[in-house]
Image (cartoon, rainbow, N blue to C red; front, side):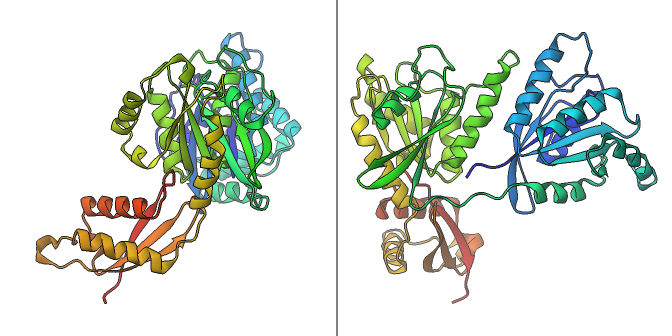
Length: 432
């Protein structure tokens, strides 16, 4: 299921971007002493205590400001709240309660969401008492933190992940299919074809579909939940707020899918953003099917296949289909392919079959002996599925060179018929 969303809100210049960087573990946001420097919005994935979640850094709120950017910032804070599972309200402990803090606290209270109040800029234990004033905001305990130096951040993150919702259990054997891609590549037209009805508005203007929507269909006795998403567009300073949050919804929809159709525009060629979407789905362990649309307008299939493979080598294990969503050409093949990919992604591989494949691969190409030390592969076993994860037991895991790892991965991928399914292989030590 999709990862939960944590949004950081607060007035200008209280250290939201610094806290964002502290949580995500890098300098992903601009940090500057000038008020209101956060104009671009930032989204990143963070992990703590075994849980992963999105973190959204919002612009600073300054009620009553004459800055023309404030109306946009206030809108995007409201939309961040609408997309969030937990809110983090940041205040400046050195300044004390500011009228704008009260305004943001009122917004947070009305959301009804779980909230953590962070009293920032407390650089040493002697300043902890400064946090007490913020009980006056009426939204709970203030957490004394120095986002710049990390003081108190571990305790804050422990409290944060405790508030994150648990992922719901999937419904029976229902297969979840996410249809993602850049704006105006024909996603809604494709979903209409798959569903057999005009359930989405189809419009030539980019960004017509703002939200992710679900429809359940049956094919061959299998239920498939189709998740249609807003178009994914590269972030930029002039992006409408609503389009920016459609990016977050798209990543969340991709997370929800067991299988992802990445839809490309056959008339525009492969873009960097297309590659980013494919990579995100593949590295995320999803089943992946690439669908190149607008076959009715003519396209060079071989050139497309060569370009995809050259720019994303793992695509040798990803099926590519060419369709016309407008006319329906090729669409009938897609759901059977999706179901096949989903079944293989969640399948249990018999240990005997797996070791037979491993023995054949080793017989064809013996493992090297780096530095004259013999490398011995004993056996393999599946340790997880969705996607399949294989552990290979060897005498010296550190001696398995990268080129031989790739060889084994390719051999297993092919022999186990895992087209469209990422395979994860780990090497574990065993003496004999």
